[in-house]
Image 1 (cartoon, helix red, strand yellow):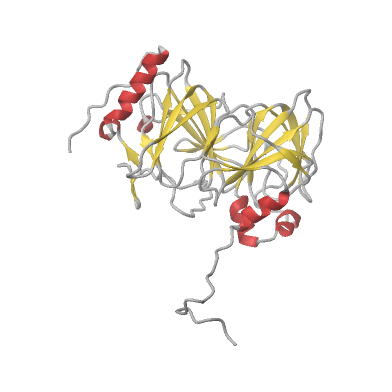
Image 2 (image 1 turned 30 degrees about the vertical axis):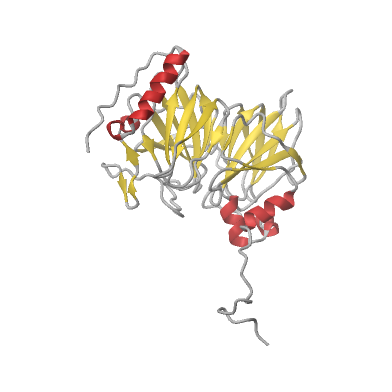
Length: 365
């Protein structure tokens, strides 16, 4: 006897199961925050996480099917459980100080000393162990591609249990975590450890707006990459869009970002140091500095230019005219909605900040 035919009204209806990454999240027993943005990473709720031996939580921002994140909270003078896994994990220090021991079979053991605003990534499937060496609680943000890896294998025991050493990526080199960037060109450097992303050298990038600066980083031979951007007091950046997965962490300053899909109303996200959000796939987004100091942010994302892994829409590829195969990826100031500048000028006037952004000419047609 067979199931009812597809054209039978009584036929079974297929119900799509959740992505395996979300199934695994629920099994870990810690808070899962499904949100458009996090106001302050220092305040997000955490709970006991047996796997790491500390409190933690998952943060599922919009379009977290490629890149996800979790937070670890380490009590003072506490060492976590050693772990290794088959997903890449770029780690940003929200607060506190400590060290991470990195081990790989057949390679020397290395130690990474970190403090607030440090950035590094244990190489793929190395065994690493975080330790809080200070007298205050430490918080770590881990941006990773576990959503893709978990959904590929459907087996967390394999993801956390495979013992293969990826020696093409890492062999315990003495200088691997020395923090000295190797400049590759086009504002891109290979660097595996940054002591303070707030002091990392940036390069002029006028394409994003007057006074805009940025630096792109390839970290630990990973497919995950990062970039740091800044923009001056009284200015904002051009609207742009790209594929999903970029976790934007505000480092300095205060302001807001506008995010919108074509034909939809703009949504506004207020930010300060510690705020995190992720622009949804192919949504326009535009960042506005309303404070009295330069604004700076860190974005951790998929699709490292050195090791590209393009799933979904690609990040913005500079073709010289702001175009991609999916259409326009940047809006020049003169082509933006006049209400955008008016809103920004009114915000600065209210805060008593001098506007330095030139009023757009607003091209006709």
